[in-house]
Structures are given as structure tokens and as C-alpha cells.
Length: 198
Length: 301
Image (cartoon, rainbow over all chains, first blue to last red; front, side, top):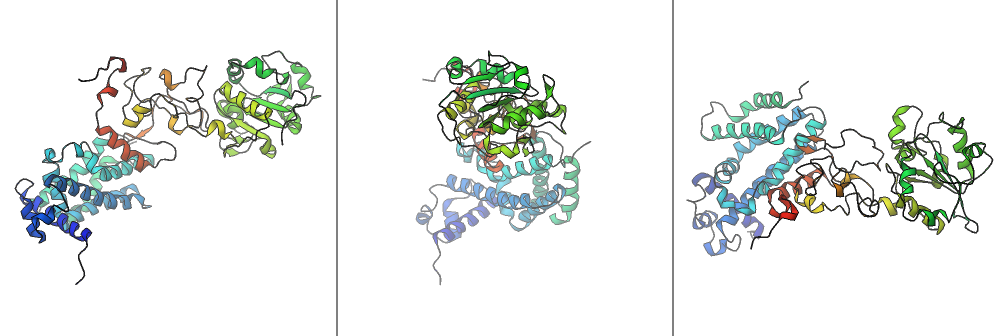
């Protein structure tokens, strides 16, 4: 059997921790819980992450980079702003369906336990790669004349708050249909809310 | 090609459509007399010269260095002679031609008076389309509104010293135009930490986001070769208007064009992604020293 590399081990810890943190919460989950799920000793775990807080920060960076990378690919496409909105919504909902632990972690751990992340994650630092791509998306949308020029956070809150809310409802099993069923109508709502006004 | 300096080179200062701004700026040169001593001044509109304007426009002389100030309008006349006759006559044999100011370089402020025919000597805004394009190698663009007197003095001294003047892609001397107006700005620390100025004319704060400052996008040595040897726009709290670039004049000089709160233009050569990433991080920190009035700041002990 091929030897598991250190990088693969690290990714294994990230997956296990994401699942545990998003299900049980940050405080209830212990390092022995994570080590056990990965199948390693607690001592060995510390070779990868020196504390639970540092692991928590790595996770949010991991999620932000994942989202940022996907958004960047959409931003680079030669498609209309309206189509980009559809792709962003679709990407976000797909992530929420296929990798619910990522969004769960973002909503239930990162946003709910800001004290865990401390000054290392002050402001937007730990979600910078994701937020930067949203800035690029909005800026280009306005520059092309497709979107209404307004305050960034007003637009950002409308877009991401809406998606976060839907994913939350989905996570609570309150949505009658799968998330994908809402993609088209939600994309249109977002576009109509943000589009250029004469 | 170098100047023959066995005798004093003959300098001719011609004007197109101009506000005289570059002439007035030149009068502020600290070493004006010493510099002029090295030339025979055939004609200058404001300075004592060998010839009168009517003698110059009779097209009987020739010059070694031709300085042209103002926008070129072929129909515009000096002493009832149109520029389309005066300019080519002197340009033909001049060793060097200096397009002085943004109007002479790119069309500038007076380009819009007759956009179909007005231009700089080489460029119509950013495109080649001026009357002296065939002489491009002999033309040096010194853009600015106005040009800093030291930039002209430096260029003339370089020609006298037979230095080769290396130019950028808009024919401006790299020596003077390779750095940005941002370089040497006393507000750089505020730019780094994204602390925006809280009002016009204040000593504290960066002018880039709140006041329309173009210094990070503008090739000019305004903050390294100071005006009147002591100051610059940004030092007194006025944003850089980007007056050395072909895009000058623009509108809304005191406003930064933003799209969803994000600057439409970011510092030269920096990707928007890189700028937004770094700016977002810098904005996260609150540095007490940079947030108040500097002179009132006291360290916490």
C-alpha cells in the first residue's frame, strides 16, 4: 500500500475536523475526538496542528480559499453578469449540498464563535480570498454597466445573506425542495435586486 | 545626434494654443539666469530675446532646440501666420524639439477646442497623430500641467552635456517620468495602512480613496523633485490630478471613481485582486497613531 504523505494526513485531519466541528460545535469537539476519527494518536495530531484554535483558523482559510478559487474561475469567464450570478448561486448551493460541512462550519463555527479566531482573523483577513473575489465580481459588474453602483456591503449582504439564509433553511430541513430547485429563481431575484437602474 | 556646443545653442520658444502656464512655471526656476546664459534665446514670449515675434514668424532663422508650448492647432496663428507654417519650418532643422506641457505632448486642455484637428506634436491623446510624427526621434515630450521647471532645466542640461536621453513609450525622459507622483509622498504610510483622509486640506490621511488622488497611477517626479524646492500637491493636501498623463484633463478631480465602493483604477501595475487583498488586510488594523492628528499623538506608556 502506498505510504500516506504528510499532506494527505493533514487533509484528512481537515476533513475530520470540519465534520466534527460543524456537527458538534467547536467547544464540544476535542482533539482526541478528531485524532480518533482520523485514526492517529493525539501526540501525532500535534505534529500537524499545535492547538484546536490554530486548526480552526486553518479550516476557515481552507474554506475561503476553496470558495475563492471557484469564484475566481467564474469571474474569469467571458459571460454576462447575470450568468455569473447564476453560476455563483449554483456553485454555492452545490457546495452546500455536496460539502455541507464547509458551509455549516462557516455559519455555525466561524460566524458564531468569533472569539476562537482572535486577532489573527480580525476583520476579513481569514476570508480574504473569498471576499476579494466578490469585490472583483461587483466592481466588474458595475464597470460593465450591468449592476447598480452602491455601497459594497449593501450588495454583499444582499447576495451572501440571501444564500446563507437559504442554506441555513436547507440545513434545518425546512425547505420542501432540494436547493437546486431554487437556483433559477434566486439568481433572478439577486440579479433584479442588484441590476443597473436607469 | 548631439548638440554642437562650440557656440551657444540657439533656443526658440514657440507657443500654440496655451495658457502660458509652462512659461510661468519656467520663470520660477531657481537657476533661470545661469541656465539661460548657456543658450542664445532667439525668442521667448515673456523673456528678453534676440528676435521679436514678427522676425521669428518671417521664417528667416533656424534654431538648435525648439521648445513648443501649447496644443497644436494648424489653423491657429501667431502674428497672422498659421502654426502649420511656423512649426514645420523650425522643426525641419532643429536638433531637438521639446513638446513642453501636456498640451504640446498629448493635446491636453485645448485638444477639445477643435478635436478633429488639434493635437500634441506627436500624439493625439495617446495615439500617434501629431504633425511631427516623422521627426519622432528628435522630439522629447515633457508632459505636465504645468511642467515642473526643473524637468525642463534637467532636460536642457542633459542635451548640453550630450547625454543620451532615454525615453519611455510616450517619448518622455525616463529619468524624470519613470517614477510615480506617489513616490516620495509624505502620506505613504497612510496609503500602506489604508487610512483615508478625513477632509480636504488636512495633513493626515491618504488622498487616494477619498479625494481622487491619481499619484499611484501617474508618471511624475513631483514628490521627489519638489515644487519651489519645498512642496507638492499632496504635501499641501491637494490630490494629484494626473496631469502628466495623456488622459488629462479628466473630470471630477476630487473624487475617486468607485464601483460598489471599490476603486475603478488601482495603482499602476498592481492587479485589482492583489490591491483588494492587501487593502482589505490593511484596513483590518486600527493604528491609533495614524487615526488622529499627528501633532497631538502621545504614546501609551
